[in-house]
Length: 210
Image (cartoon, rainbow, N blue to C red; front, side, top):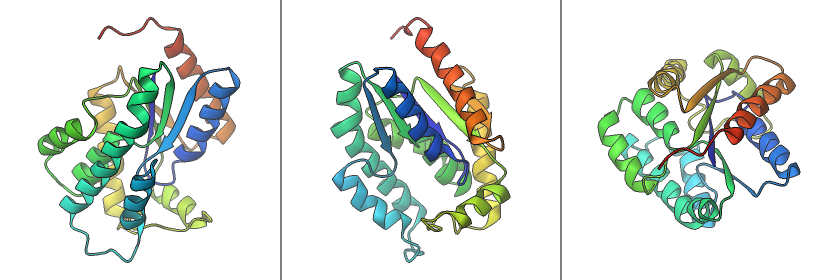
């Protein structure tokens, strides 16, 4: 099963993705926990470029292609082999982030982005996408308190983050069978219990037809 975590900056998805991966591992599941951008040696080098606040001149198209380059490497090197062995992949961000950030946030053509994403992901789509929804003002306040500091995308104007959030909700509405939107304003333990309930139900369901 391929499970992705999505959501605006400061939604707590990274913490919850880690908690869920640890929980599934404690149940004896073969779990690969990975993040975007990065996840491989090559991808981590690309991540450094994308997150560096000094790179203010990075064109949205170049930004998109860098994200997709990191993603393609991760798919080839880690995700597809793990899924082929019957394992569970927990991915902190995936292709939907590009649609939300570069599509809705930057205003790039969604149709073109979907074609590029299909190429970068080898056509692999998540079985379940968990979107942790948070008001952008709250999310950015959380990010500002984070020990890792604000990255290049965090530093975008609030209007950008509002478009990103609206994009996530629009994507979720398009595919309600894949997406589950969860209020990220709840306490972390409450959120984790909700996530566990959703995943238990999906793991118990019959495998989808290919």
